[in-house]
Each structure stands twice: as structure tokens, then as C-alpha cells.
Amino acid sequence: MYFLGVDPSTKKTAFAVIDKNKNVIYHSYLNGQPDDPEFFKELYTETENILNQYEIKGMVVEDQFMQRNADTLKKICRLTGPILTSAGFHSIPTRLLPPPTWRSLWRIESGIDAYDKKDSYKKKTTYCKEEIFYILQLYFPILENFKEDNDLADALGMAWVASQIHINNALPIGEIKKKKKKRKKRKAA
Image (cartoon, rainbow, N blue to C red; front, side):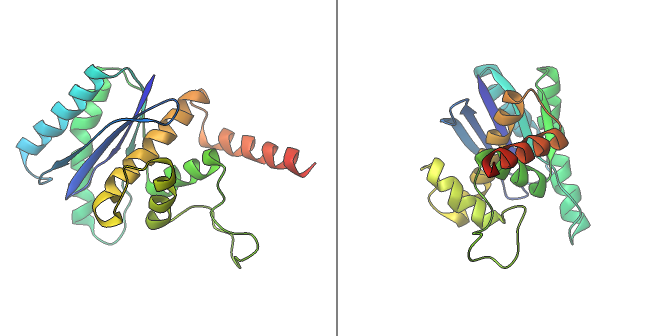
């Protein structure tokens, strides 16, 4: 049983496959331009190869949200098309999750608080990209350098979330949050 996380990027798209025990089974990068049809073909081929080689039970692809640059948003959104097409042909349950959502789900499922209750003046509900990287390094030693491996770290984090969504029977985010509240109440009792 394997899970796939994909981080589409204008510079380097990362793919990560983990098993249910969070062991890294496969990872890769593809470099290309988001307006190059040959790169779309490479993305489709890589996704097909992964889905044919591994029994993928769930997949999370990083969704984009409007930040400052609409042109970058359009370019990155184009990259998800070939990936989602391949997933559709294989009937793989796939979630498109923006970074704040998958990071929040990862935080909930990992059980790691996003702040130190003693030292923090402000409660955070999610991690920033750098914090995710350094914490994921503890679980995945293949992550060595933030500048070079941050896309892979995101793909691994999304694969982790895909595994938890599958294990939790694809509960909606609201249901996962309810479970978290119940756990907190049990701990407090």
C-alpha cells in the first residue's frame, strides 16, 4: 500500500512515494518549463510510471492559491493537468490541497504542535515551508539541504497526508478536526 505526493513547481516538480509506515519508496524531480508541451508529456509519463509500478492508494497534489503573481499561478496550475489526467485513468483517489491545508492536516496527524506553548505568544495553526522541512528531516533523512530539497519535502509531506486520508477512510477535513478535538479532551481528562 503506497501513497503519492506531488509538488508541481515552475522550476522543479517533485514526486514522492511512501508506504503506510512512512518509508520512502521512491522519489524524483522533473525540471522543465510550465509552458512546454514536452514537459507536460514528461509529467504525464512520470506519473504513469509511478502509478504502474506501485499500488498507489491515495494521492495529494499541491493546489495553488492566488498570492501575488497571477502569471505564476497560471503556469503552476497547467502542470497539474497531466498529473491529474494520469490519476484519473488509474482511478486513484486524489486531493488537491493548498499548502496551508495540507500542512495543517499534516500537523494534526503528526501530533506535533506548530508552536511551543511555553515560549510562544501566538498560537499557530500551521507551519511555514522552512519549519515543515526541518521537521520532516527528522522522519526522512534523505532531506539534506532546504534550498535543494524543499520541493521533495513538500511532496513527502503530501504523501504523508495522502496516507492519513486513506487510513482515516478519506474523512473530510472537518471530521479530522473533530477527531483532534476529541483527542485533546481525552488527554485533558
